Amino acid sequence: LKGRKTLAGRKEITCCAFHPDGETFCTGGEDKVLRIWRVADGECVRELRGHKGIIQGCSFQTGSGRILVSVEGNTVFGSDNALRLWDLESYLAEPIAVLKGHKKRVNACAFNTIRSTI
Image 1 (cartoon, helix red, strand yellow):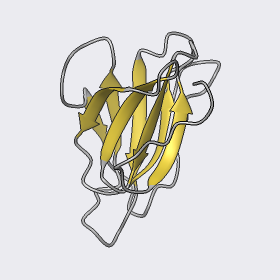
Image 2 (tube, rainbow, N blue to C red):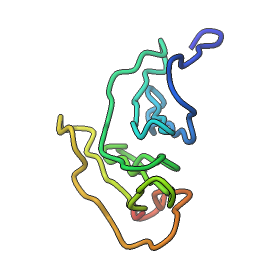
Image 3 (tube, rainbow, N blue to C red):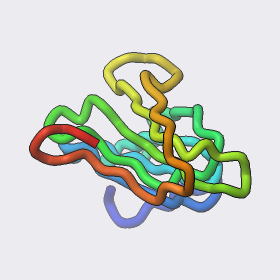
Image 4 (cartoon, rainbow, N blue to C red):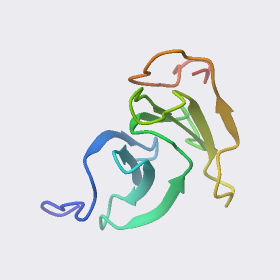
C-alpha cells in the first residue's frame, strides 16, 4: 500500500495475518467475517463466513499458505469456541473443517512452522 489505507465500514478488527507470499493478508473481527485483502491496493478480494462469534485469531499455513485457520472465542454471544479451516485454493464458501472441543474462550491460533500443525 502506498501511504495509508483505512479498512472503512467494518466493525472492530481483532486479528490480522499476512500470507507467506506477502501479497495478501487476512483480517477478522467483531462482524464474524474473515476478509482477504490485496496488499498492493488494499482491496478486499474475498470474504469467508461461518463463525458464530467474534473472530479472535487467524493464521496462514506455513509455506504454501493454502490453508487458513481461524478461531472464535466469546462465551457471551453464542460462540462455539471452534477453529475453522479454510482451503483458499477452492471456491467453497464454507470451512473445510470445524474443530470443536474447547470449553472456554480461545484467544489465538497459529500454524507450527516446522510441521504445518495447528
